[in-house]
Length: 291
Image (cartoon, rainbow, N blue to C red; front, top):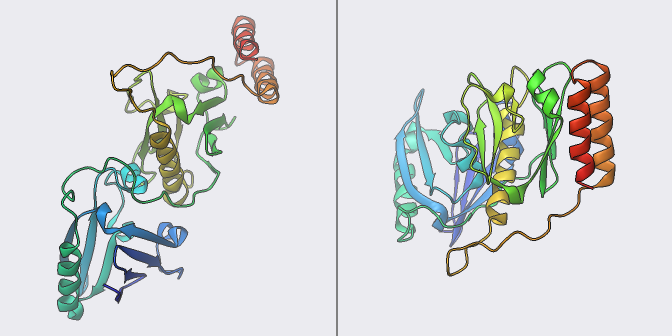
């Protein structure tokens, strides 16, 4: 298309095969959009284009991403408020005719598979923080492993007894993000054993960190969840022609320094009376067996 369409807080720059969505960094721009900065969306990643009346004399043009095309929107799973939707462009109502023109132009470049889920991510996950603070722990991601380290002030006794957690993305199948703007906000990891999410029990689940007032903010936790989800999908092993996965090779040994740190952490819990002698000995033996 080669044109530019500017709205409130957002500018769309159209190219032959994609649209570059740029977000302003002004104080009125939602924090998530400021953090995203800009995103390039291939037309093949779009399922539909919508145009609807907005609030207070505006119209809203929205590109609808295909399911499975964008890890950010897959992680959000419909929970973003309209003002934080990175695929939504708000314009003054007097520019409705112009918005209709661009909506039609976008529809004309949608591919034949627009109505189907994408078989791979067509949009990269946004740059995300390597870690963020939840209410009950700190979540970190180094590109291959997610780590939860619990806080004394927020973690449940169940999480303290389980100890800090480390999850290789190769052992995960999904990421569940529940917005901190609603009750029971959390980030939960689902592993290849098929452990199903347990609504209402994130505070007791060592595979989840709980959000709260001022913790797990959308602009921190959602890009984090998207980055993990993208890594999980990229690491998912393809099935061979016979549909049977090969036997697992010998698992990689854990980092001795990390094991020592986790044993020291268990020792602190033991001294604080949060672990019995038997629990401490059993957990220590499990960690030593990983070396």
